[in-house]
Length: 171
Image (cartoon, rainbow, N blue to C red; front, side):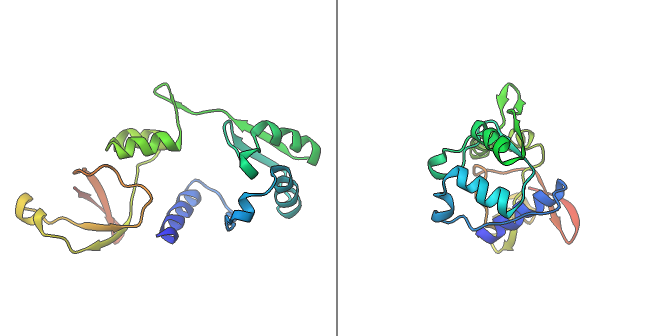
């Protein structure tokens, strides 16, 4: 399941034009690093970072002590540029992963898509079901075995299914 989620995230990252992605095992030891040590040892010395963009409310390092403001100070000290990205506002609300999860759990997929700035998508393998779609709706349905971190509220959704490189209307 985690591998499928990672592959999906990699696809999204590639689609927006990122050329290089470094995946690091997020172990307890890695998470427990002093934030300044992480910046100096990993970002500056290992990756040779010259510029970084960080969200206005991002926290990192041991006990989430690293902040955009501390990163800016370390940027001056270690010689890299820091750009603090302000919140993106949609309908008067800051866009956040928390808000997107909330909308999906409520079944408000279109609203979540506006916050994502793309259509929400899931993927998985088609598996056998109870055949109720054919019986009750008069059309075959597909049951998807999803390995996704967040599934919208139970319900019936109008969507598009992509199969063998063709986009098909679906429910």
